[in-house]
Length: 262
Image (cartoon, rainbow, N blue to C red):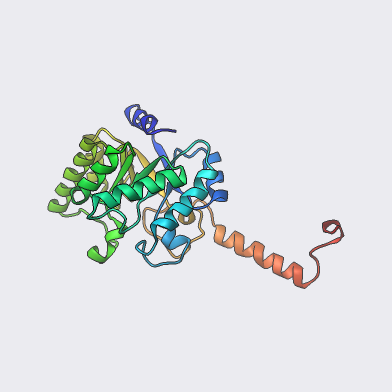
């Protein structure tokens, strides 16, 4: 899977499937299931490290997770989030961060949150031949500015800025963009106006593709239940049940049995 193939998928109306992964074992399964794009998201800060926000995760930690993922992937395009503090306000630092991700992890692209505010950083990274995916709408790295995870761009002024930012990302050469938690009508308008694929998360079905966090859609995280999340499994119950069964078998001396010994 390449950025060019994603563009071709948009042109012919074929939807793009995108999912997060943070380690080798899960990335291998996600890739084998036929995923188009695997995002090594800074959501690892939440689901892997237990932080409340995405802000604490470092560039070194993102590179480590990306290294684990790329070892397990043969088909999907691997995109890595540039973490908070690694690109905002300093385009030279942004390029250095992106280069480290590409050289040390073997991923194919990076993702960055924001529009006009980070244009210089995006353009500098693009000038080095590194593919960039944008991210507009609810941008979790700015949660302390927003103060809430509510739907973004409901007011006309913010909606117009989002449209302008989307056009800018398209014009300067990004290969795609994530639209997070915005009105479905606005996402449809953006998708129709830009030539690059839009990937929605809580942005309706008109986007060119969809993305979810792996642990959320598999039901590992049970406390997170936004409207846009569809659970495809209840692994929390399955896993805790299996572990409890193991504990019981060990304590009752049922495990290991004669066939499970040398």
